[in-house]
Image (tube, rainbow, N blue to C red; front, side):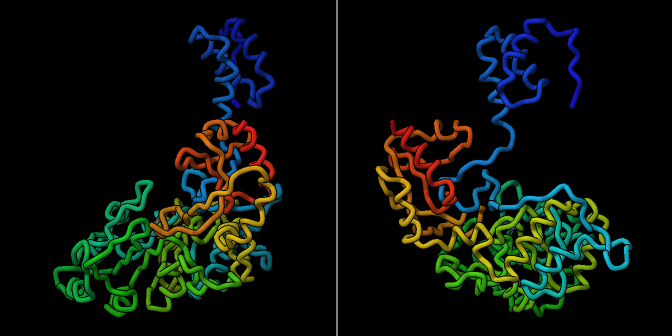
Length: 423
Ligand SMILES: *Cc1c(COP(=O)(O)O)cnc(C)c1O
């Protein structure tokens, strides 16, 4: 905490700041609010200014949008608490010697998707960059022109490849690329191809006259095939769900099946369909994962124990086939009957049929039939202004809370808030 010199502060600022003590902020920030209010010749605005500072801090919110992986709301929700204890982050408890921070979550995720090995970095953008740097720095990487995509948040495939120091060899066209295009680039004596890369288009869909080789078709070209699947579906059979894969999952690429099809490495996010904390996972051939781990960039991209502990928690749930314990899958698998069963808590409010979406730049156009509660008018601002903000959608002049993304424990709070704004 920085010290606040009192002598160069007019007494009026001090007095005004002290009048704000009911607002949950440390004194220097209350002084900032008071000083700004006085500078604006509007001392009465000090409490609002202090509350505005408070509201810029991270705070839990209730997601009533129906977007399961809402990028602005932290993508996958994750129930995770940690004690103040030390951990064996880098100690081998058998030998007492220096251990390996990748021995927990990374090893479990490798086990869960059938990979020889895995490592964890800060996000999938970092995973792709590290893989290309480790496998192809100063050499060529072949990629389809149909996959030179921008994922959102500034992840542009050509840029990430350039940062890695790999040279891009583009093949095919925007809508059609064939195995032969890749094979010719690999065979071209003018190229020094270190890897073939397949990037999942994730957030958009190409329809009509299109063609792209399947993972299996690119696996035997010679250079290792890297499949950036992005979304982090571990296994397309979804053995962690009692009912198996939901129909909307469609043809989403999965880590296990991409590796089975011959990808040497897959990269994916921790906080998309995996439902864990923000992280990037590199999984596949042990020798290639080892090259990534040894690369000089790995140190700069490594996650800390908070993330690794949360990811380990998620990975253990997958290995138990316990989709209920992974919030994203718990919400995704709810039937409309189950959602409708909660409407009792919303007595007196109007039921609305809604379409939830996976979100997070995954599965574009996919809608999951859902159930919401609506009140007439746009009250989204007032709902966001609550001590525990509720983020709702405004549809056709009504404010709608989609029950799929609202935790059942929060039903009574959301119902009370909707009743209040509806007056
Ligand atoms: C989302 C995505 C990324 C970026 O992942 P972050 O974890 O957000 O860095 C990279 N590649 C693909 C294919 C994606 O879908």
